[in-house]
Image (cartoon, rainbow, N blue to C red):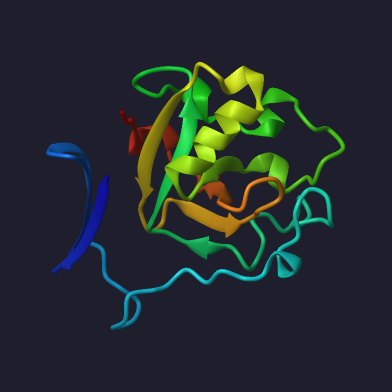
Length: 174
């Protein structure tokens, strides 16, 4: 699998290829970088990243947290449907799960920064055994992202911006 991105005048384009198949292309029009340099994701040590088990990420009033970053980022998720449907992108809060969990994390979509994270989830949680693996590029402005490696080191939380339809960015991959 090969993931490439290119910054063109007024466009940010990314594509995902699997062998010779071009799985999808995301092109964000009107994209203007904030700086001359391409922004880099910063990986902090696990101790510096609060998770479900070791302290709150944020409060309902300050969600997403201030240290969450903007896209672009390639994310992977488990999806029941092919193509992914809106029901594949419900938060823990939408589903009524973890009522005593971190209120901010409950509002986020659970995602992974690589395919292996979803494969581990499918092995670990029986509910996901028959789910598809989907990949999508979250473009700049589509929400905030935070590395939240509680159970899996590649786990990320994504808080989509208002008006964003999360499943539009994702496709099932082989």
